[in-house]
Length: 265
Image 1: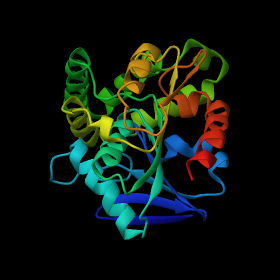
Image 2 (image 1 turned 45 degrees about the vertical axis):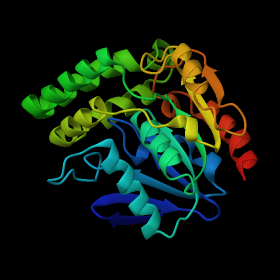
Image 3 (image 1 turned 45 degrees about the horizontal axis):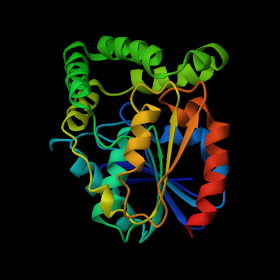
Image 4 (image 1 turned 60 degrees about the vertical axis):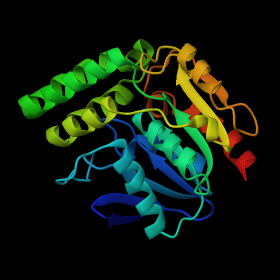
């Protein structure tokens, strides 16, 4: 595995073959994808820490979805990736949709986990409040945010039967830099939908039946907006699963990826 720093972005690269670029969500890092890596063993996998998340500092520039898109494109250019499959989780699905809509030559396919077009208005208020808490309370605020979100965004089944998965989510959130997390919350709260009707690549949408961020009914409605794809966007719903699909249900995610990716060549 190689670790690159590309315009302050921490980027992990491993494997050979067709490129896959993995984009995490709010509170995530490149480790969001660790549990599904066995399904990607025949690919060149590029995992980023977005600006303000994980090992990538936010710097002095504002953090925004547009900046995230530009940062991922810069990483691809630096690594000589002209075309890739894109995997996204949560906020990362918004980044991937903008890449596919605005830079179609770069995106071979989309596999989106816990997907959303953009936060609904009520959620934007809550996301901003969460960012303000992180900024004002620092590490203590991040711990409180982590404990709240583990309860709200993972399923009861995950917390009971897979305590290590719940602990992973807690650790991922709790270890974020408070200011970086706050600025990423603001970026997500300001997010606008991509023009997904312009997306022409194959698209897979995966969610959990207990996902409060990307509930199944919203994901099915989202799929109907992908009118430009050569086939309708496919929707998969996992039982007893919350919002952190790659961590809560890695075996099921790997099964779906193993079926989806070979058909997107």
